[in-house]
Image (cartoon, rainbow, N blue to C red; front, side, top):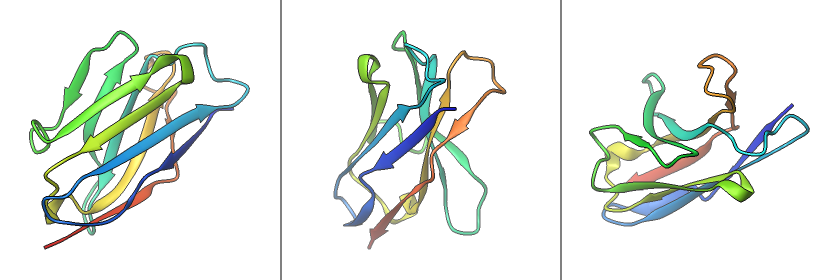
Amino acid sequence: QMQLVESGGGLVQAGGSLRLSCAASGSRTPFSINIMGWYRQPPGKQRELVATMTNGGRTKYADSVKGRFTISRDNAKNTVYLQMNSLKPEDTAVYYCNADPYGSGWNIYWGQGTQVTVSS
């Protein structure tokens, strides 16, 4: 199996910054995970894409976070980061790390989630 362990959530005032980290480990962790990323679930809403990044460096962002959030990876450590700047109250959510080791679209792993709360 592969486990994803997130860290870095917390409470921050609007306009502030936070950095999330997620490290993959386990017996089925490949040398280089194809796609890693972040999703979030705001209170009372469905889970939504925040950002993803391939091991080749291709990124995808939700329109709502473009220009404010930056995803990055350390492929050697199978770790993905999310730098969140200019945070808004509407960014409040549980943030989940996601990994698609082989780019299959169905063999997907999730972290346990980390709470991000942005106060106005």
